[in-house]
Length: 309
Image: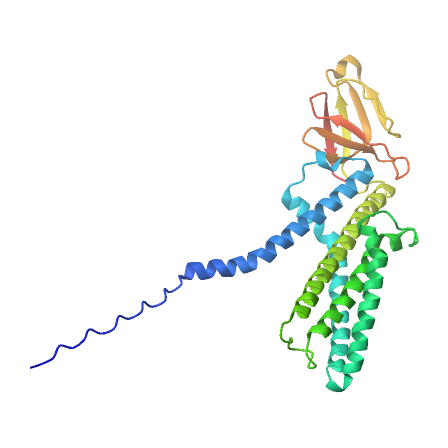
């Protein structure tokens, strides 16, 4: 008699295959996240530049209604130089500290390694303590006026944080300087310290770039005004009513009844900016120290002839 065969064991369900759409979405998220942060930073720095530039000229930047694209476009020239300096400086620091780390990786240099960690931490913390007050108060009397007072505190924090981060890296790495040691409560404390230091480094660099962009906007506005606002269009105003202003070198003509309804004509203005409801005008003869911005409502009282610069 034939014996019945036992049923075969149930096979495990194969792992579900991931669809190409989900794989593409994950890769797109990896690319889009840094892109979003970069775009947000460009927008922030662009808004800083616009606000500093137009505020220095006497125009409220909030009234101008710049688009997102226009704000980002104004940030490219403003952040190009500091980003280049940051990349070059970062490369130099990386090569220098990397070379030092390779020399200290030799087991024969264990004592020197400990000494280097202590000195790097001491110098780094000292620099950070000297520069950190700039983030919490206006206590800047230690620094000379001008660009040292504006950029040096943040730069000191950045350099100090970099040295301290490298000290943490030496402390956490093995004698080879590459692989991390077995995690321990002490190592986790050092990792937390390193994370805090990286945050301070990022904050200080962000602060200095923001200071640079703001100063650049004010400086460009001053150069533009001192150069007679070259590049801005000429404007001739035809008004229904006489305009009261304090801009100098403006030619005025009253055509009387034959020129009605726009009988009053003003020549010599340049169009500095235009908001949805206002014209911001300045005399062609105006300079930085005697500039007077004339605000003309766009409400039908006057119409403007605009001629290219």
